[in-house]
Image 1 (cartoon, rainbow, N blue to C red):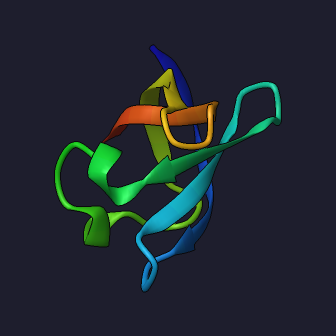
Image 2 (cartoon, rainbow, N blue to C red):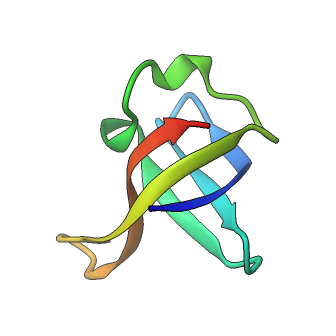
Length: 67
């Protein structure tokens, strides 16, 4: 598990970006959030697993959980 902070949320489109502890931005989709996507806020700490978006073959955060 990795952890980081939600850097940006695009709530109306259902995705966002997490800044990991090394400062890298990681994309996440609402379908990868454990719990309620609408309850997330920018600046909130989260834990996640690194995965790969199968359609774009790019890194993405999976199993995103508020810390």
